[in-house]
Amino acid sequence: MSPAPGPALSQVMAGCVVLVTADRRSGELGSALVRRGATVRHAPSLSIVPHEHDDQLLLDTKALLVDHPDTVVVTTGIGFRGWVEAADAAGVADELTAVLEGARIIARGPKARGAIQAAGLQADWVAESETSAEILDLLLAEGVAGHRIAVQHHGAGADGLDTELAAAGADVQSLVVYRWGPPPDPEALAASVQAAAAGEIDAAVFTSAPGAAAWLAAVDSAGLGDQIVARLRSGSMVAAAVGPVTARPLQERGIEPIVPDRGRLGALVRSLVSHYEQAQTSAVTTGAGRLQVRRTVALLDDHVLPVSPSGLEVLRLLADAGGEVVTRLQVLDVLPGDSNDPHTAEVAIARLREACGARGLIQTVVKRGYRLDVDRSRTS
Image (tube, rainbow, N blue to C red; front, top):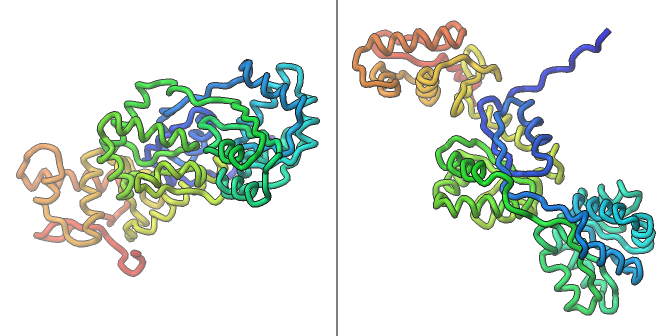
């Protein structure tokens, strides 16, 4: 006997087009958003170029096996895993693990700590802010003169960490485990920028600072910076970043993205879902339920209504009026064409009522027009 299906997830993001700008784990991220009703577009702004066969990485690793580090700084989970995999491919994974066990390991955030633990090791200290600046403050306060420190770079470098440590007297060994490469599909990236400027993207999610910076660079290259930044600042388009480091390039442009408390993809999805759940409080509460009219769909108590594009515009007009009367002339103004026939408005309203399926949702006010049946006692 097959198990009973679990409760269906709320389709709170129905009608929302979400742009995923990440290359790595984009499918996982996109699937989680689709399960909440979103339509997902993939347009990675950068690609990850691994270094499993990079001769320099292997030379640097073997140097550490000979001259052991006192401290190892791990900046990213994916980079640390890539480093161990590269060492394993070269047949020196056991030696590297032994060296790391004898060193003090510092992790730049929970994802780096998770990768360290997956390798059977333990981080001695974690920068909860996920910034290299916090690590630098710690090490400089302790004193690093004469210490040998290995810094595992992420794709955009070590944020000046190795340079600052070397200036303070440390013997620094930098290890670049992967680099950021060009976008895998430049046409898709360019199209995503055009779509964002045209109002076709409701939210964009970013999982790395270089990725966010690269997408903004593509925006500027297309000459659409003013339009897109204005949409993001106004809230008509939402940006979401996996953590504070990823958020920084956006914040430097005056954009305040949604940032989860924990730097995880699951937390990123939950934060974005929570944003749209909170948006329900600004919906119109009617006698038939809570009505939300989005850019491409209308929802009544989270159920998508089978409304045509022209019907959606009429419903938006009624919702914006908040229960006040909308005249037939106003209805005609939002319908396609240039008809002045009141009967055209009556037909549009009749079709809209049929599509909504909720008796009394749209009321006729004799000789004046139409209005929504708004429950004013519950409307927030």
